[in-house]
Length: 273
Image (cartoon, rainbow, N blue to C red; front, side, top):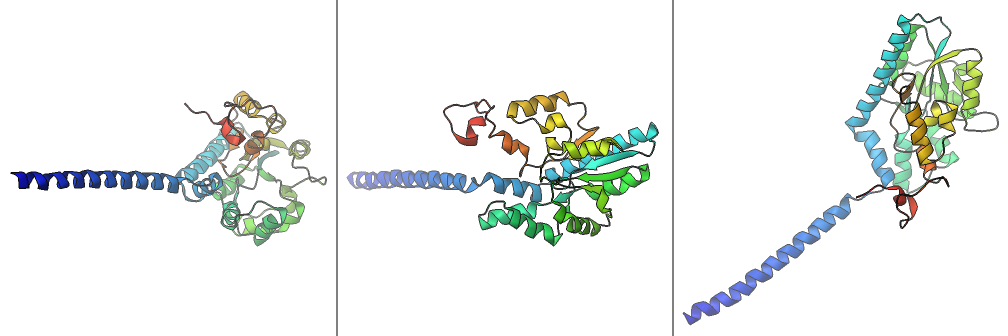
């Protein structure tokens, strides 16, 4: 009996030691797994746009809504002077490969690197864009593009769209003003002088009207989006874009009221429990 007790005692401590080691190893693995799941927000944004079926579905949904609204208007008899205005980047053309390259190179946006990408005229189309743009012709409605691309990008932009059998004239593109302003209000107003805009399609609130374009803070943008809630899905069609946009500029607005005053940076705007 004494011999058995002597055997049990070391076995007991051995088991405890193994259990402790296993527990420690398991905890370390959990921590390692959690750490490996953390990644740069911009990386997640590009990955989502390039790989998520949900992104495709949202784009199809947006263009379906646009098509239904056109059908509704056509029943009310269009007079032939109507136009649909679209943004280009992340509305018709998918520039996620450019953002992916910035991530892989560890670099930031620059006019030079953007022009390198733009000159390739190799962007793919946003899901659903081609079908919608081809369908527009049956309604006798003109298409115009109001984009913050520069005029020097016009030729390659037309070339890029032509690769997908989407052919447009240069006068259908209203790119950045001569003063290089990214404001779109003046270009919209210039079009209104001779045409009737029945629909605007974009990925940014600034693509729709002056009030939304001039909204700067987080609160202002949300409140004004609510004001025009009945226009979204009808006259205003918005596409998803989590890679960039005025929503990022809004984070830096001095008019913002942080949700958490003891946290710095963009984390101060997170709502947690």
